[in-house]
Length: 177
Image 1 (cartoon, rainbow, N blue to C red):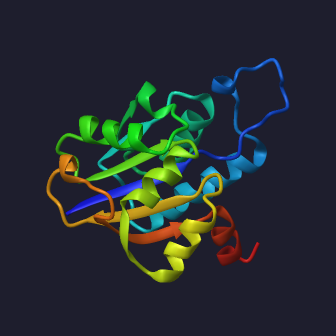
Image 2: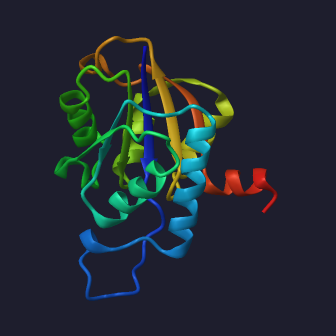
């Protein structure tokens, strides 16, 4: 059984027009959402064996904040292929190449690639969660997909079961804030 977690980076800032897209940092809202998602992952035993992260500043910051919630952070790879804004195919290729023997992998990346990959892989799961996934994939949102497979190379369209689709606002509402 394989487990894939797809996380879109936290909200990033457009305020400094002198920065390239690659160098945009998280906003205060993005920082708060990353901390909340880190707490959520840790408290729900969603600790991946491997993290594959985009090299963009906002994605790396999101992972660094998340990782602080784990007693022992997992191995993390920062790979250029995840700085992608396509349909998710590049992320799937990267996942197949980089995941090795890890049974649980977290990808930290960008839209529309993260959303495209999630929509492509999900074939089963709660109708409500699938509707949420189909409507919008906000920043710092986590999607958790399980596969009844043994090898990442065997991933195919519709082969996954959507287990969770958690937005930062879901965590805020649950906390009563």
